[in-house]
Image (tube, rainbow, N blue to C red; front, top):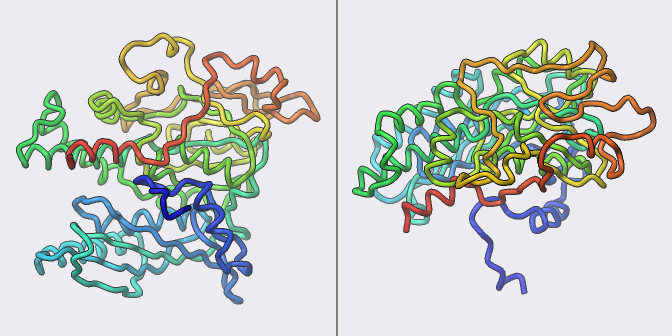
Length: 409
């Protein structure tokens, strides 16, 4: 009986949510709601638009600002310009007028910064919440001739990443640690307050909104899909791309970059950076022939982290072989590439043609063997990859939640 099965914190598992989404009356949508799809795309007759709703449910400062960014991100992932925003603001009992005004102006300031209009919404005080919960909805219009659609991805497509894994989660945990210390708890005592305060500023610089970057990228004929890793981090986002496209995926742990601050947080709490809340990161799926141009054009911004394969390959994470016998640090953290916010990424490839490429960041980009799809189980591509091949982890409960529970108990 489903009434006896308790759901865990975090994202609803795809095996539960997928069948429910299939029941929605959205047959006329060009891109209906489904697992791994960031927003719904519809034809309004004289305009192509996409519609998205996303809440901020964690207790955090400046939640009004972030609800705008996360909704703008999902609209941008569909190849659309975010234009109109509404918000439902649920406030706990005891909220002051000043606190409401702070949320209000956070929303206004971010809308103004991004050039987005407001279509109103709803605001109330209710005993149903313990802290402000803001649910946003964004409407955007298509930029190019087609929507970006993860269902159009195919084996051999390349997954590029812009940003750093776990950036948002790092800042959220740092905020929680500082709040816990103010409440008398001794949390992550080896991290100084000024270090944690600097981590919280990652939400401002580089920030968590990807629309400014996506607006430079689009329209681009070689870009098939963009995905915004949120709860469950980059690893879960790769699974969601595979869910939506029906492909397999081979990802290189070496290529997934994190900031030193993120590694400090992950080491302190024994969590995995590739399963950490990652708004502000963009996964760009493109055809192989577009990868060279994009990596040159956005050198230091985009890195190749994965390749889509035939589904029989499964979903594989390639780690350095040394990770197998590593010490106390979680094995899934070994091989993660640590970089600074200003450091450029160094990508290398052979020749100027996509078919001449061998590897980028340890993952095969394309095969020269005509008629053989990359990633077939018996294909020499898999045998030739150097490193430990392990199943790509999926985090339906974000690593942030596991840390916040420590302070709630």
